[in-house]
View (tube, one colour):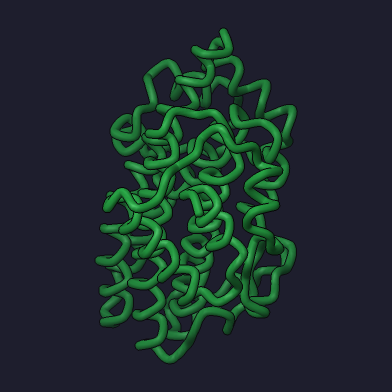
Length: 274
C-alpha cells in the first residue's frame, strides 16, 4: 500500500480514535521509509485500491446548518464545553481535510504529500489533546451538534487543487488565526480552571495552525506560478466561483504574516470588502 492509498483508507475510518491512530502509524511509516508516496497514481486508481465512503465520521455529532448551532454563554460550564466541542469538531474535520489532500491530488512534488501528512498528524494531536480536556469536563465528542462547512468546501474543490489550496487552508483555516486570540481573551478573563486550561491549549493550536496556513500559502503560490496565474487577483476569482465565505476584519495581521501572507494580500482582502 502506498502513502496515498493509506491516507484514503484512514480518511474512510469512522471512529475518531482509530483515525487518529491510523494517521500516527502512517506518519511513522513514511518517516521510516516503509511506504512509497506514488504521486503518479490517479485519484481513481487510489480509490479503487482503498475503497470506502469518505469522509469517515461517527454517527454523532449531528450535523446541522451553521445557523442552527446554538450560541451558548461561555460563562457556564456547559457553554464552555460547547465552545470546546466546536474546536474539537474543527480539528476532526481538519484531519480529514489533510488526508484528502494527500490522496486526491496526483502528480505533485513529494514534499506536497509530506507536508499535508504532517498537517494530518498535528491535527490528530490537536484533536486528541482537546478531546481529553472535553472528557475531563464531563462531555465527549458528539454531545453537541455541529456544522459541516469545512468539508463542504472540500467537496466543492475536489477537482481543482488551486481552489483547494486557496479556499481551505488559506481561507477557512486561516479564519482561526483571527478568531483564536479573541476566544483566548474571553476565556482568560474567567476564573474557571477549565477556561484557563482551554485558553492554554489554544496556544498550541494557534502556533501549529500558523504553520498549516503557511503550507497552504506555499502550495497555492507554487500552483499559481506553475499555471501562470497572478496569485492575488486569482484568489478573488476563486472566492466568487466557489462562493467561499468572505473573511471579516479585523485580521490577525501578525499571525497571517507569520503564515506567509504578504502585505499586498492583506490589503487585497481589505479591498474586497470582506
